[in-house]
Amino acid sequence: MKAVVNTSSKTSTIRNVLFVGVMTICSLTICVSMLVSTLQDIRQQRQALIQELQSYASIIAFNAQASFIAAEQRIMQSEAEFADERENIYNDFAHTEENRLGSFAAVPMLHNIHIYRVQNTTGKLALYSIYNTRGIGPYPAQYDNVAAFLKPELSDNYIELSREIRVGDTLAGYVFIRASQQELQTYIQNSILIDLLIILCALIVAYFLTKKLEQRFTSSINQLIQLVQRIAKDKDYHLRVAQSDVTEFNMFGKALNTMLDKVERQMFKQQQTETEIRELYQKLEQKVSERTDALKSSNQELLNTLATLHQYQNQIVETEKMASLGQMVAGVAHEVNTPIGLGVTASTLLQDRLTQIERAFTDKKLTSSQLEKFLSESKENLGIIYRNLERAASLISSFKQVAVDQSNDSQRSFNMAQLINEVLLSLRPNLKKHHHQVVVDCPAELIIESKAGPINQILINLIMNSLIHAFDNTDQGEITISVKISGTRCKLYYRDNGSGVPENIKKRIFDPFVTTKRGEGGSGLGLHLVYNLVTQALNGTINFDSTLGQGVQILIDFPVIDNSYKNKK
Image 1 (tube, one colour):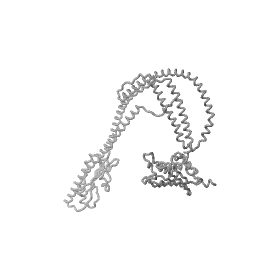
Image 2 (cartoon, helix red, strand yellow):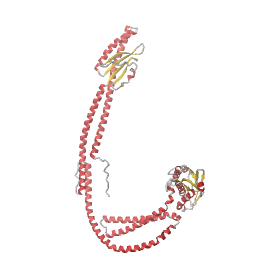
Image 3 (tube, one colour):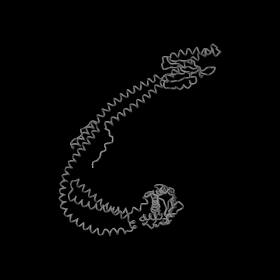
Image 4 (cartoon, helix red, strand yellow):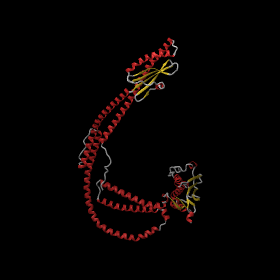
């Protein structure tokens, strides 16, 4: 049968993997680096712009403070008493301040500048001086919001900030600046274009370097592939891999050359061996023809023997059927172990003979007599193995029915007393080793509907637990199993008069790996399995009580359907 090769799965070449991998790494590295650098530069430029605007605001606030102080001094000198006179003086200085603000025309990004003064009479803000750059209309006064711009506010196109004007410790007014971010956006666009150009140039350089690196590696690989294909096609094992300038490929080439040397030597040895085997086969054919006549007479004797055996076959079968089921259960371990032991012995002997023949064949010392003896012994040993394994399989099949309930978790109607007796029968080889007594108190006609499998396993685990742990120091223990029906509940009482359980273990008796036989073969899983079967498989409850030296008492309560009355009807 020809092997079918699945070619539908996608494959890729080293060239593609290397190219894609290097270009991907370079692209990600460059893009991430440029992105981080650009974001950092934008953040720094925006911060620098804010600091510059804050500096302008500080200069304007300083000039306005001086203007406010000068106005107050003039008011004091002129002894102006009326509010109109005072406002006129402030207006004179406000014109001077507007002229100063006009000098900011040299800063294109400053679109609007407002200076607000706190009125002495009302305490409200009044527009003191204003500046609007040429081509930009006036900006509404920010009487109510100017204090909110002490922390710079950035929008898509503008930056708005304000600064307090104080005379001494008194708040005298605010400076409000509204500046354009057009220069910053232009700078960002130019930076992005430059970064994209740098990324493109870097990727182009990376592309050519990757191509160069790819050619360096793939050229050596292609040479190796061509050499291997030539060897496979022409069967020319004299070819050798040339030395490479790459260390790894050079090491691989040396290893391949070493392998070719060994293959060449092995091919030569194989040719010699084939010649010797051919000569040996010719001798064997001659001996086989000589032995054929002898086998014909032996076969006739075997046919006569088989005819005699067939006469006794029916008698042997009837004798086997009359064997007691109790005797079969008691001797099942011996009966199964005996054929398996014979089969293991025969297989071990056959393996030893096979090893000897293989060693003689390898050393080219195999003789025809050794091969003939091996064939004869192999036939005999295989017959022993087959007969004994067939016998063991037959014995095991006979006892399968004993474990049927243990492997069945489905709910069905069954006789409880019969189930208990089947469990005791399956444990007879364990019970008969000692003089323990098992007392069963269960109505013979009790038929319930429940899960027989879990009940079977629970009883086996409880009895085996008593035999291993409770009665380890006595040969005359007593086990009591009592079953009672109360409505739709079945109460199963289990007691033994064994050694009991210590107090430090009793509270943890249903936990996994809790055992008094630690290091002596006890797994500590028996009662844990019983607890899970009662609570999960049977949907019931289990109570455990024990006194050291006085045995254990176990009560298992689970729901059932009593079908005893229905069966009577």
